[in-house]
Image 1 (cartoon, rainbow, N blue to C red):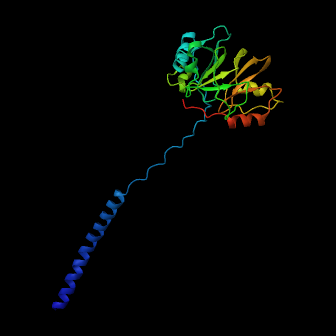
Image 2 (image 1 turned 90 degrees about the vertical axis):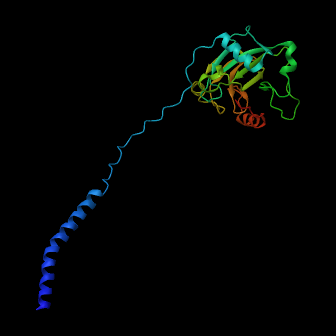
Image 3 (image 1 turned 90 degrees about the horizontal axis):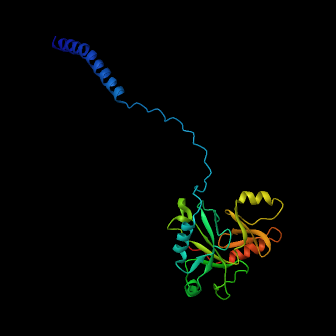
Length: 247
């Protein structure tokens, strides 16, 4: 009898406990589902805008006082702006770094030649009429030289910036009728001619009775005559040219 009563009791507990167990399992399952993190929707796709071509910042026309300030910053009191040469100065992005540069005609101050010819000047001296001679005598400025200085610009303010000090000082490079032309203009004008590797704007002028273009060749400035240009000569000149200084 005792054994039968025990069996009956267990059966009743099972019948009572099973619904409770099922309810508990359902509750736990529901909580588990509720605690699952909701997956975030993917971010909306963004179509990137087409890259806009970079351009040189538009700056106001150069004024004589600004040009004088830039010349003094680089050369101190060793040169004067040659106002007898017209135009005296022009601007353009001559080295192709998207910063406006200044080309200005200068003449030496006679009693400052020692400073102009110091061993380590703040500029790179180059004679446009002669090939670069790395093992030749050091190039010097004479009292009667007419000089063309090209002051490379620095960032958005260009040659007006106080950090714009990288300068090429060119002998036999200040011709008549100086004008700035874009690379695009030069390519369009001489489609049937060999062209040098152009990096920026060029200076068109008449020099020594010949019309041509002054252009930046990567380590120095060179002369392009459409009638006589030789690409091999240009490569040798660039290879032998002195390294440029930092801005």
